[in-house]
Image (cartoon, rainbow, N blue to C red; front, side, top):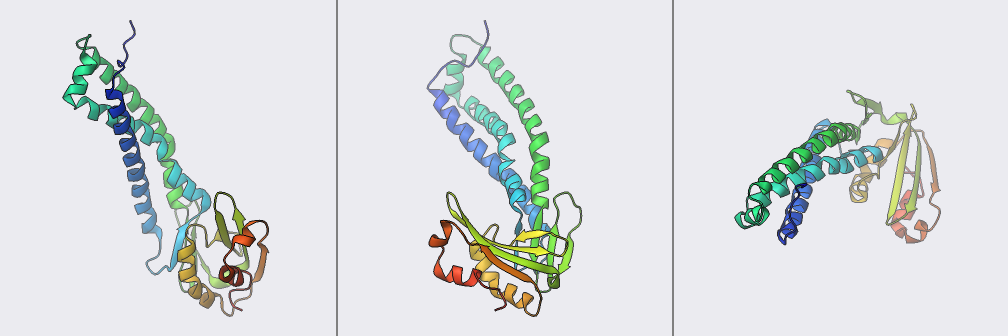
Length: 237
């Protein structure tokens, strides 16, 4: 007869343990790679972030191995509760231990396979960053071991706009001389507004194109007036 975990009210506690384990592992893995990302930013940067695809890799990829890690942790924690362990052993002494060990081995194998795929993606996401300093723009491509550095005169075009979905997103995309594009409002609108005077100062006296053609659609009506006024004109006007 195929062995399996008997049905029990303890399974509800197992689900709780697994959810806590998954969340903890997810957050922990993401924090490790975010710590690496922070090391890549220049110490004098006044605005910095990752790219859209980099942020997705960094935030979403840890979830896959975390599923297996959380379930391993949940199984272990439940096994450490004497009444729950006794309930699993009831009616078939020794079977609970065999089921526990077999499930842990299977989950460990699954977790290793998922980690082999997800952790490199996490690293690539953490590696893909940009940062602004008073005199330079820094950009690190996802597959690069070095960071490119540009003078602010390398900015050839700026395009602003907004998009609507579950929430409204604003964009301030700077395109550099080598066609690299960086959205300075990618991650935090609040941090962008705090850094905007420094961006204006860095662009003053530079020659660049500007377009606010991205302000179209339903999001325009929901854009705060002061934001629309600022993003609809050149930063140096």
